[in-house]
Structures are given as structure tokens and as C-alpha cells.
Picture 1: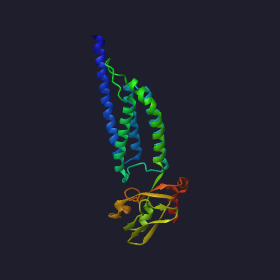
Picture 2: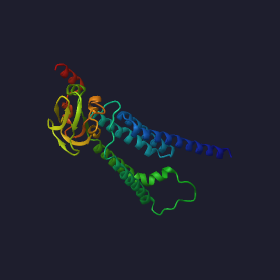
Picture 3: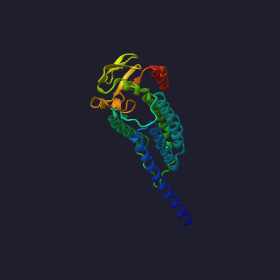
Picture 4: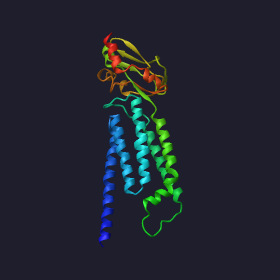
Length: 272
């Protein structure tokens, strides 16, 4: 009777642990998509992935938990943070982070759900669970994760590396907007348009003059700031935050290294 009571307490503790970890994962997942700080989003994602690993440990699937930590929290998050560094994302709040094609994530999620269901059905087919009691999680993981886990992790790693790419946000500086004066109109490039370094790609009209915006990088326009169509004064109010112009998927990442940094730009404008 004492042994049975101990066994029941362990099960209760496991269930409580699952619930607490799941609640933390849900909160962290919501924070990933609601925060306006890209570095904070990466850290919240680490917490989500760590929660998944903890769930696997509670389910006695240590091999899967180790893969989760090493591959996702380790290699993939390093790659993610490297992408942030490469694109020189600002360390602070940033608006307009939603990709215009975010709705495509819904059918992708449905496809992934269907793929997971197919994996389970393909692994077990018409097998009937034995009557001797619950099947250990380790036995389940050995039956189908051993077949599909490594290929899945390898493919997801490659796809993430391809998806991150290098995307640069283009705008004008505080100094430039001061020289232009009140901005009344902005002509932005079309999404999908190709740009080359030094090419005229946008037009800004102010009460003082009309000025061309030249592409700083070679690549493809993947997003424009639609808010500027109705509120071009955002460029004056917040040129490096709400007043960004467009984003370029960089073709030659070496060009990023050739750009002037903020310190060099400040020294340059002081001499004008």
C-alpha cells in the first residue's frame, strides 16, 4: 500500500510538472510573436524550446530531449542570433516586424500537422496496444523517432538557414530628415523590385525639395513601409524606427561590411 501511494504521488507530481512547463511554454510562445525586440523574441524562443526538452525528460525520452537541446537550442539559436547580427537589427523596440505574407504560416502549420499524423500512422499502422498496461514513452520514441528524427532535424536546420538569409532595413538618418524639413510625400519601390548599389530606388518630397533615395545594397525588395503612404511625417518623427522605408533581401552580404557604421557617419556629418 505504501509503494502504491508513492507511485501515485510520483504520477501526480509528473502531471503537475507537465502543466507548469506547458503554461510557461504558452506564455513564452505568445511573447515570441508579440515582443517588438528581436533579441527578446530569440530568448523567449529559447525558453519555448527548453520547455519542450523538459517535457521530453519527464516523458523519459532522454535522447529526444538531448537532440532538442543540442540541435535547436544550441545550433539553430546560434544561427538565429547570427542572422540578427548579420542584418544589424536594432537592439530595442521596432515596429513593422510582421511579414506581409504571415498568413502563409497557417497552411504550413496545417501541412506540418498532417505530416506528423502521417508519421505516426506510418509507424504503427494497425498495431494494437497490449493490455498489459501503459506503453513507456521510450518504447514509442524508439519505434518512430529513431527513423524520422535525424532526417527531420537535418532538413529543418537547412530550411532555417535558408529562411534566415540577410535582410536589411533601409531608411534615412536623423541628420537627413532635418536637412529635408517636413516631408509630405514618399514614393516607395514595388515589392519584388531588384536594386543595385547606387541605383535610384525611392523618392522623398519635402517642403524644401525633392530628393532621391539611392539603394545601399544589391538585392530584392521584400517589404515596404505601407504606413508612409498616409503618414509620410513618420520619417520626420522617427526616421530610424517607425519611419523606415523598405527592406532588402541582400544578395551580396559582403556589401554589408562596406557600409559606413554609425560612428563613421556621425563624424562624416559633423564635417559638413
